[in-house]
Image (cartoon, rainbow, N blue to C red; front, side, top):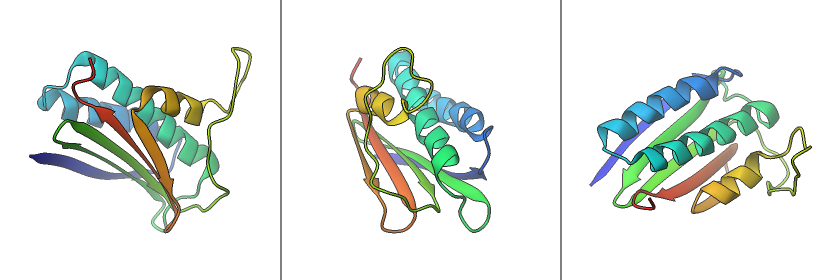
Length: 131
């Protein structure tokens, strides 16, 4: 069984908060554990924050955010209209003020990847039964 949502939200700094609320509701309805919800909210927040900080809005001024439960996987995706250099996590320490987003996603998600064929789409997967 596959359940999913796709939302288009404004390309603004407030968007991660709105998306977290919607994702938490979706996961609660689908009886995800609190640990999975916590991890998913961290990952989606970082994905959106990176897109808003480094990407470009889609032509309509929005960013597309989607999530789905596909069997035992939670699939997250953030799609903006920008095209950039290949994305990769960077090392950081406790004094770093920025540059943590992809490293956090790398540590929390079970798998993640970037598709730059049409804008920039960052995808991540988390196991629903990981906790």
